[in-house]
Length: 320
Image (cartoon, rainbow, N blue to C red):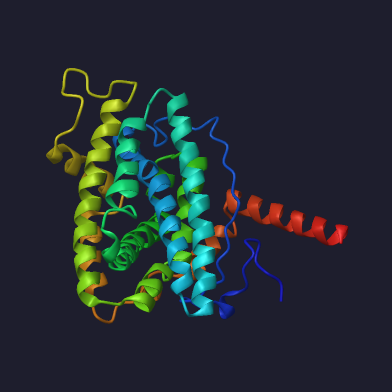
């Protein structure tokens, strides 16, 4: 039976918990993407742009932690899924890193904030944070943190794939494709981090603790990142006012963007915490792999990656 253009089989063959995960070697051309890629809405643009500040370091950290975990995984199917997850996350990190380079070309230097994020993942959440006798416990703690983060990335991924507010706003199509390609892959591999945590630990106390801490930290960092981006904007968005937004203004800007469907609502994000903490929770019950694959079948970047992979495969077979 023929595959879809994105390289996956039809809906009847899908397994929501165990999809076939492979990285898509996407490519984006940023030459015509403006700094304010949501027209006349620099605040919503920069609130979303915070993700570009967080993701390269965060996803490199995911891969680093999972390299340490692979030898402990006894389930061969799960091990294969982890390798697919690592390939996808590594590709995400590169794609978002290229957005940071583009920001610099446009006169916005993200390095001061990115340096703080890199310290967070490489030092605070690094291998040597705990003494040697506690390293295995620290590894399990980090697996729980990744599972909590991946819950939110899947939620954001589902939102960006399904939402049409950014289309109505005339958002830059290349940026939208990046966000939706990434979001679709987050939905596609949404079960992996949780399954790894449950396979190697599964402590409900640890799951609860790390979700509460992670959700609070994510909200705080997102606010700080948005304030930084607005203050660093070379166009001077706040003449006659302090360069950084207050906490109250950030929340107001976020809510205003959410009312126009340019961001998910704060209430919907907060509601994800108790969902994750239910004893019966599993990521495969939240979101639709088919919806993700439907987008990936039409995504310009994902289609290009599939065509390139097919051409390389044909070349290898011809050479053989």
